[in-house]
Amino acid sequence: MQPLEVIMTKLEKIGRRGFISASVASVAVASQNRPAVGADGQDAYFYPVMRTDAEWRERLDEIEHYVLRTGGTEAPRSSKLWNNTQAGTYCCRGCDLTVYRSLQKIELTKGWAFFRHSLKDTVMTDLDLGQGMAGDPFAEMQAAMEVHCRRCGSHLGHIVALPEVKDRPIHCINGFALSFQPQSA
Image (cartoon, rainbow, N blue to C red; front, side):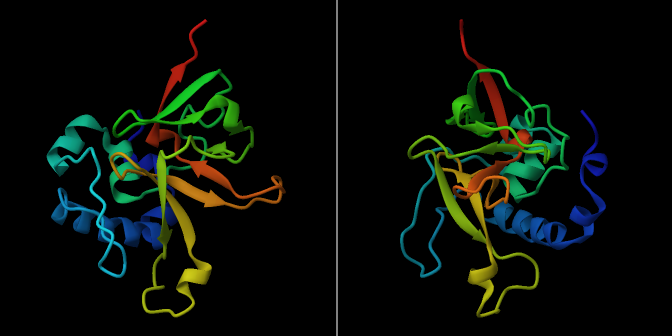
C-alpha cells in the first residue's frame, strides 16, 4: 500500500478537497455517535453501524479512512478495483453492505469505478458544497452529489454526468471505499 501522501494528488492536498476533508474530519470526530440531521434540523437518521474514530482507524488503513470517513477522493488508478472486470459484488469497506453488482459496472478509463446505479436502499446522497461555497445562494445549483453508505454513512464517491455516458448520471466510486466479492462458480 502506498502512503497517503503519494496517493493524494497535489490538488487534493491544497484544493477544496483538502480544506473540506480537514473540516469534515474535525466535525466527524466530534459527532461520532450522533445521528445525521437534515439542514432544517429535522429528519434525524441513525446509521445502523456507528463506530468511534478509534474503532474506524482500527478497521481501516490510512487511505480508506481518508476516503470513507473524511470524504476524500483517491488519485485516479490508485485502487485495483477501478478496472476490475470480474463478476461479483462490491461492498462498502466500512461495514460490508453490498452496494453494487458487477453487472451495473461501466468500463471507463478515467481511473475510478463507475456504476449505472446502486442496489436498492443501499446508498444515500448529500450535497458536496465544496470550498468557499458556504453562504453562496447558488451553491446548491453548482454542488456535486455525494454518495454515502446507508448503513454506516461512509463516503463512497459522487454522482456525475459524463459525455461518454449519455443516458443518465452515474456513480463514480472510490475503489478504496469498496471491497470486492468474486462471484462463486
